[in-house]
Structure formats: C-alpha cells, structure tokens
Image (cartoon, rainbow over all chains, first blue to last red; front, side):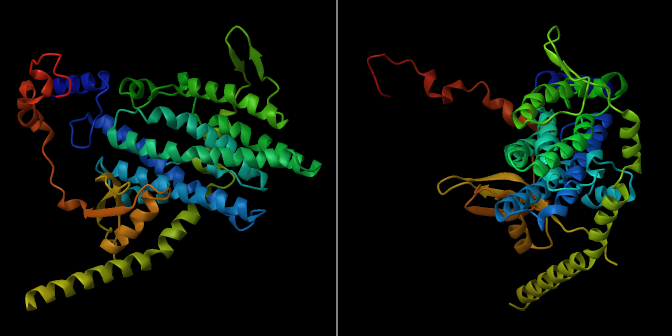
Amino acid sequence: MEIKLEEIFQDKIDQEIKIEPRDWMPEKYRKTLLRQISQHAHSEIVGMLPEGNWITRAPNLRRKVALLAKVQDEAGHGLYLYSAAETLGMSRDEMLEELHSGKAKYSSIFNYPTLTWADMGAIGWLVDGAAIMNQVPLCRTSYGPYARAMVRVCKEESFHQRQGYEIMLTLTKGSEAQKAMAQDALNRWWWPSISMFGPNDDNSPNSAQSMKWKIKRFSNDELRQKFVDVTVAQAELLGLTIPDKDLKWNEERGHYDFGAINWDEFFQVVAGNGPCNKQRLKARVDAWENGAWVREAATAYAEKREAKANNQIEAA
Amino acid sequence: MSTKEWPLWEVFIRAKQGLNHKHVGSLHAADLQMAIENARDVYTRRMEGVSIWVVESKHIHASEPSEQEALFEPANDKIYRHPTFYNLPVELNHM
C-alpha cells in the first residue's frame, strides 16, 4: 500500500502538481521540508540581528527608513515561513524551542559581525543577492504552502538587494576612507556569501532526493556559479575587487572559475563556533523569555473577555 | 508560567473595492483584535489590501483530499454546461 501511495505521490510531483498540507506524503518528504522551511524561517528571524545593530546609527533618515523597512520585511518573511512549516504538523513553539536549544540551524552567515556601515551595503548586495538566487527557484517548489510563501518573499526581497547596492555605490563614489570601507566590507562578506549555497554537490547527501521531489530545482554548485557569474560585473561597476586571486573568466565553460571555499571554517560556524553564534542565540532566547509576560497577559486578557462575553449571552 | 500558544488565524485580504477577500496566509494572535492588527503588519505592508478578514483556523472545515474524485469528477463530462457546446451559425455574431 505504502509503495502504491509513493508512486502516486511521485507521479504528481513529476506532473508538476503541487502537494498540499492534507495530501498523503512520504514521511521523509515531510521531515525534509519541515527542516528546510523552519531553518529558512529561523534565518529570517536571526538575520534581523546583524542589521538591527545599525538602525540607530544609519547615516541619514533615508537610509534609516529603508533599513527599518528591510528588517521589518525579514520579520514578515520569518512569519510566512513559520506558518508554512506549521502546516506540516509542528507547532510554532516547538520550532522556537528547537532554535533556542541550538537543535535547529539557521544560515551561518548571520554569525558574522557587522563592523561598519558598509556592512549594511555588503549584506544587502551579497547576502540578499545570494538569498534571492536560492529563493527564486523555490517559488516553484513542490509543496504548495512553501511555494506561496516564497512568491511573497521574492516579491519583497528585490528592494533589499537594490538598497544594499545603492549603499555600496554611494560609498565607492565618496572619500578614500569610504571607498576603503566598502572594499573592506566586500573582503569580509564575499566568502561567507558564496558559502551560503551550502556544501559542494558531491558532499551534499540529501540533494539528490530533494531534487527528485522537486523541493530543490538546482544544485548548490549550480546556484553558486550563477551567483558568482552575475556578481563579478556588479563589483566591477563599483570599482571594487573581489578578494579571490583565482577568480577568472573561463571561455570554454562560459563561466567564472573561482577559488576553493574554506569549508573547515563553514562547518565550524555551523557547529556553533563562529564569531557571533552565542551572541545571536542569546539575543533570541532573551527576547523570548523577556516577552513571556506579554504573551501571558494577552492570553489572560483574551480569556477574560471571552468569559465576559459568554456571561452576557447567558444573562440575556 | 503559562506556556499556552496563541491560537492560529487564517487571514483573507480584499485587494481593492470590488474584489473578493482572498486567503493570503495565517498567523498567531491572542484575540481577534490582535489578529487583525498583526494581519495588517504581516500581510499589507505594501498596500496589498483595503479590508481584512480573520477566522480562527479551527473554524475552517475542509473537504478530504481522498474525496476529490467523488466531489469534482462528475462535472468533467458535463460539457453542455459550457456555451461552446452549442452549434450555431457563424452569421449569428454576438451570442
């Protein structure tokens, strides 16, 4: 019976029919999606922290409203994604518990510090740029609620990258010190950004199954290559140098070749040993714990109002 | 310490006057007022709507996916419900 159901399921996937929450699905499909979507949601929420660091110190009001709006979008994106994940049968509180205990992961790039204002530019340009590269194909992912959430996310995300690039552009047209600040930000964010696509294909054991189920549409290396290919010209336009001496155009492949990624560092950061892992997690746990009384008070108020309404109905 | 999760609400937005409310997603809120306020922040940051409906998710009743055939297949062969089923002369321009 199970085999028959799996055949029907795969057949739907092959025909590009979306899977919806109450449809039958293999347990591993559900688990894979739950892990991926909740991890994605956590990344949006933790991703607010490095930028939150600069809201009060934005150089002018225009930059400040843009950064505020971007961070607010990220909160929204986290909420769309948590809702999508909940349709797979895990409660919001359970997901948060997994984040706070360190069991669930989030994108390791958010464990790097934001040292200067130029980092707001580099994050928007590179980190959001890499995220968009990843997210656009997810608008066609096989699970309906995830695909719908991603359509909303992608619609909103393109302003994020443009505002980041504009910050870089302004800095590179500024004083020598500002140019140096922009180059320094690129130097620090480049390698973590291209690591965001995850391990190389031959070292990414779950990828093949995810591709078969059309959760993923492109492999990690394909997306990384695409990102490098479009970003080189953008760096040239800024007059900045990508910090990779092996970066060069390969006529034969029709792509840029680039240097080896330091995967030791990547896995160290994933394992919790990046520069800001402890700080990021502490900020989330503190927010959750310090907000407990607000959640309780709101629940108590709602219960009281409902009881009052019920009494009035009885009295009438 | 209470650890009770706020209930889940489904959110429907009317994009502009004259259109129907359309399901856009869900969210958690302690009560209906908070549900509407949160829906405004989460789902209408870019003028996506002029009106919001929220319904507690537990009140939504759905058809079973396993009943899909029984419910919807019978409409398949009733092509006479469509205007193109009827053979009329071409001279009859607008009908």
